[in-house]
Image (cartoon, rainbow, N blue to C red):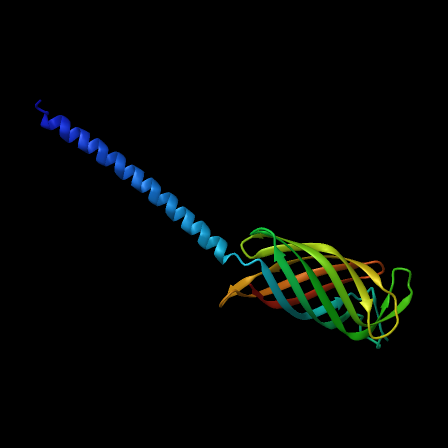
Length: 198
């Protein structure tokens, strides 16, 4: 039986083309699996941050002696904090934010009552969502308590925005703006945190 050379070449060409396609598909799938494994390996779920900044007590809530000719511009209170977040997905995290205002000041409540606040600590359970790479919104309920002297405690609703800038080996720098709505007064915190993902 004589085999036509043209037919044989055609069969070899079809087999070679099919084999090349199969190998490329297998190689693509293997590369995809390796890339996915690498991404999952690089995905750090835990994050701990040290926060520093200032909490602004607006003038409508800040009580102080008015000097003649000067207006009440509110008060800037030094604030430090420690946050822990756990990433549920690449974009959604839950965590605890604990901030302490290191100062003594008087506030005027909505009912025009004066209350002294000293070394106030706020602990909040917060959910955080990454809108775009690095830009997060956060919100959650919390509780404000004074630890240095006896005073009133308040419920807090915390909401804010932060921008994470990654550097080094899973470190991050994150400027933030956070609004705290309390039962009798409100504050705004400006600051930044430095953290580590692990």
